[in-house]
Image (cartoon, rainbow, N blue to C red; front, side):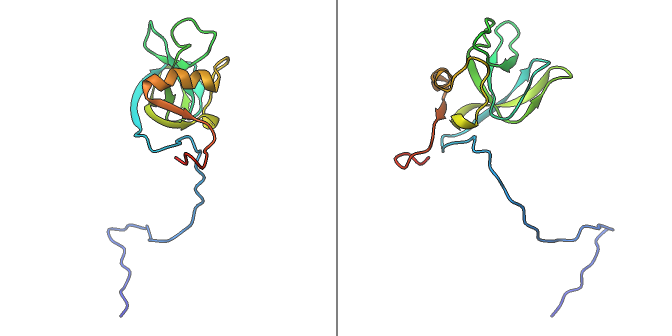
Length: 138
């Protein structure tokens, strides 16, 4: 038995099968629940997914955490969910508030080390992991 193919409502889409290669960025490094939220990123900022952000105390806006800053943003607080381009003005961006992350896939600002970021983020339930070992494969 064969069924005729009908175009419903002039829809030109034809079902098909195709293959794509998925290459993960390996930012997520474990099974700890991910908690997300959105924040306001200060105008002029451009950074990739996985960037470690700090919060400016006076405005409440977020920027790439830099060790030399003295406005509160020197303290790592969240991790960017996606690439952010705020060159045209302040933008809302998704951030991770909790989870396990691969330190090698994170973007750090000047003067911020993986160890410093891990120590600052741990009390916030953001766990930074190094290389995966057989003892702890998650």
